Image 1: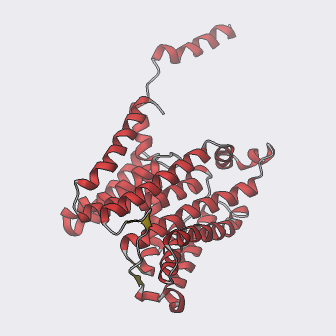
Image 2: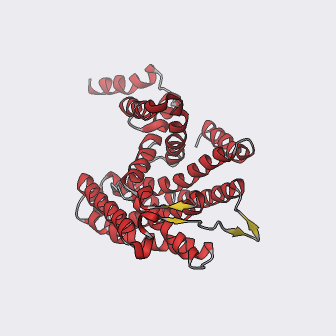
Image 3: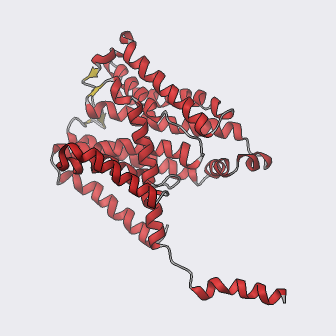
Length: 326
């Protein structure tokens, strides 16, 4: 990361700490939602952006994590054991969902994960004995940390922000480990990776499992944040929205989900001044961005600030090759 990138990250970190003291409760709720959805988008970016496995089921894992925490805490479990179980449950289900990726790829895999998302939605809606169906679950308790309550909007925001920092740091470390390099090799050329001795089967399953785990942990924070969950919150719209965050921010770039989630959460709210037209304007802005910069916002920033090679330096290899041929 260059000096400009470090400065940007430092400014963003200071803003994340200072903003809650300047915003009203609804503003704190919005940035808390940004934090939670960023965690889920990091998981999808790991699966899609780094490992190259097309998943349209991330919203389902957010729902599984949210319902797991809501049901367990309602049954008397403390928050943190319920939070861990939500992550482990999504890890196991994500590992199983990864098996179709061993046989189908690209848009075929997208259809498989879309079907899984629909299946989870139908279970959440119809199995009232377990999920309370369309009536939803209200009043999920917020955790106590070192004896301090996080019931307040600002306290819970900082709790979610701390979880984001921990999970993002763990993801950063993993992506710079042999696992991360294996994921990139799997994305770039699975056949070549297999020929070099990489266990592509294991890493494909691991990419789905780890990405799903982050989705489940995001859901574990989503339930106490909104204080009411119901099946429609975790329909295909949630998965499409998370996919939009990854692509708009910059797929395969570590900070892409941070930027994409910020745009997806805040821009629609800013566009509400256009009343009934705000969704049309929002969609048009996203389409324009994708047309002119398919690599996302961070790809556009890299293109603008990337130092250009001088013409003489670019022409030197050509002149040298011509002299050698003569």
